[in-house]
Picture (spheres, one colour):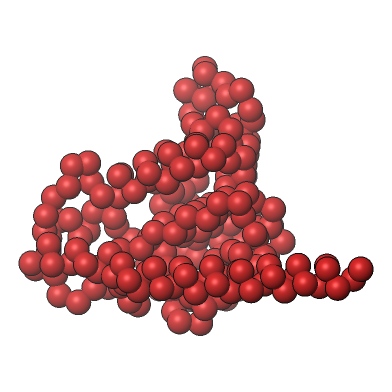
Amino acid sequence: MVFEVVSCIKCSEMAGLPLIRRSETETERHGMQFDPPVYIQRYRTVRDILEKEKIVKVIDFGCAEGKFLRYIKKIETLEEIAAVDSQYSCLMDTRQIAAPIAWDFLFKRKRPLCIKLYEGSISDCDIRVAGFDAVTCIELLEHLSDPELDRVPYTVFGYIQPRVAIFTTPNKDFNCLFPELKGFRHWDHKFEWDRIEFRTWSFVILFHCLLWSLSNLWKILTRF
């Protein structure tokens, strides 16, 4: 296993910003308890999809403290993982999880695995995030401003163009299960969607991707 901390994508733009610590269990402490916790169920589901699709290179945007890495490091088909977060302090926590442990040396993988950490944003296009066949974005969208959110489809589907893209975001429909909850589930959330709003956002992206594909197909056909 190769582990590398890579220089930030746009570190100068991050200087002086407040630290944002996202805790998956924060909401559950104020309402209904889940077993296993929802964030663990979420990580397992995303991991299972990556395993089923036999993903080789995955980039995880909004990796936070790197807890998701624990669930995907053992996927045998993976050869490269890129963990991206806008907070450098979170990447330092991720470094501890990403680094090889004694188990990794005793039970070596069939394929070598390279893990890289980037300080950056899903709204920024960078050559170092190109060429991945899967993108995961777990509980990140709701932390983005409107301009950042608008650029997500261009970064993921226009620039990276992965074979698999997985997005998760809190379901506002379930907020009623937390009687003490006032406002959003986290102080940094810019919004929270219900099923219809999330589905609408997804369908708009699919529609634009379809138009882009048809446009490129038309350009190819008109060459002859």
